[in-house]
Image (cartoon, rainbow over all chains, first blue to last red; front, side, top):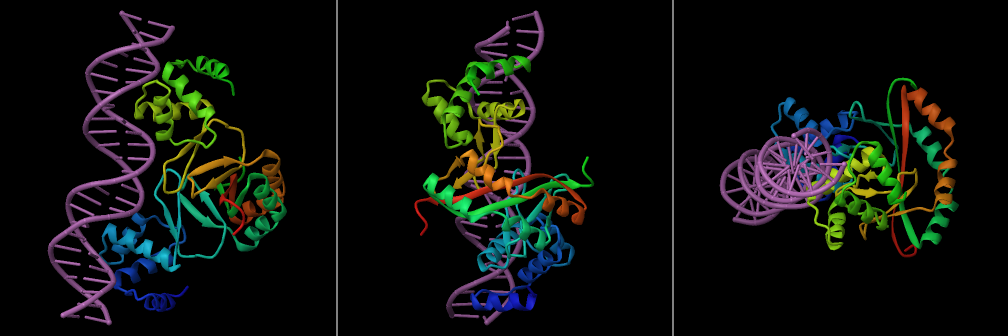
Length: 145
Length: 145
DNA sequence: ATTACTGCAAAGGCTTTGCACGGGT
DNA sequence: ACCCGTGCAAAGCCTTTGCAGTAAT
């Protein structure tokens, strides 16, 4: 999503498109490794725009509400944020503390094989409804050891 | 795993099989919904065995190290613990704050369709190694709305 | 002028840690 | 007697919140 479109979305929600929000959003879309709130704050500060920790968190929460970002819970660490809100597969490199996107065609290939008949069976046998299937990969840089 | 076998594992690791550890382990295997540390402490206390919060956490960490339990990270909430350390699929019921196991045959059916060729492709295209595939379901009680 | 945004600091939830005491072997 | 296990309280990390000041419309 382009920043100019973000501006429109803000307007539509009766929310102000302020300097810090602009700066936070810019850093978020420019950073490929899905930064934490703290990393994002550092980036914004380095860019010459002062912003407080609270504002970074509040701003990111706002982005998520507006559909401009997605929050990625990280077990045992700070959550990360992603400006790409489309459904896509994440690969966690735990040793580096990074999260990367898996190319869509490969992600699609993984998801497409998950037969909905199996999910239907799970629903009927367990007496529940499945809302979402969470899938993510955990790996590390380098070849198979 | 039977408590009697747990005792053996403790011995093997040169760790004492004390009253609290016994009580914590007993409550853990008896509780089907994968309790949090706090819930587990309450259960142990109700059972008439006094135990502190710190000990519950330390004990659970010990169990995980010994392979007697698994820690389940819960986004935005307290982590949960599972005495079943075999690979199996979890279903999170977020509205109830519960986690249930998916019957093995169904979980197996879901996993088996994930072609390893796709994972190989991801590895070569991204220049990484995939260590684990994380999969879990999020749902709610009741029929499809 | 009105309303929303921001910063600071405080508090919050969950978890770990330091240290002195007590209990197992 | 030794060492491990335990409790308590303090500190830790990440995040949210209250409130007073500031800026946008």
